[in-house]
Length: 234
Image (cartoon, rainbow, N blue to C red; front, side, top):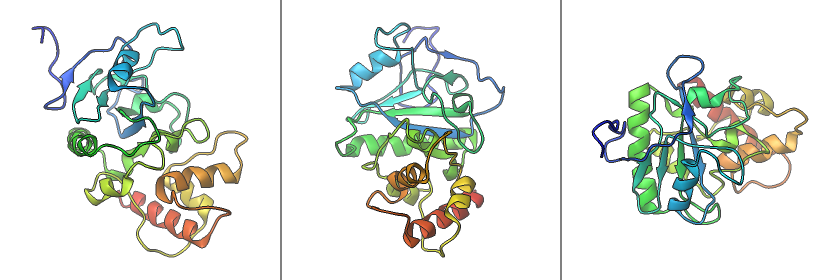
């Protein structure tokens, strides 16, 4: 490591700087963590793309961290800075999610199970970020949560329940049915302009009930009420 290279925020991470970042626009600390998958052939290909200032196939992007299938983790942007990972979307009324979040990319093609070493590393990484910035479990979201219809990562195969067992995300427990739309809003979901009810149901199910099918059910309403309660509790 060069003498003037900053130390990674996360112990064990390899510093691999990306030029694609800037200051957080609101001037405060991050209060969200957004989880993505790379949907690329390899972690190295994803690392190259996240550090490319002028890619031929689209705009420049980045993330704070990339975790590979074997559990190694690269840090590309300092946590205090704004990485370019979230794009257009909205979470709990916040439209500039990049300025309010830390972005984590996971090496996964979108169809395969997430590797055990990757998940082990992710748990430690989340614990550190959440401690440093005082982010509660409700602040850990998927890319699909804040960009319904535009993004689907980390997808239905991602094990949110495992994270919730460690206090690193929220997961619905048993509860009574409530007003589905009101509970989605309380959780943080915002429907894009022109979106129908089916899109928001699919978005919610992808994270919390990936086995769900068909029209809205009482089980969906119970799950949404339970998640909303967990979010209100912090």
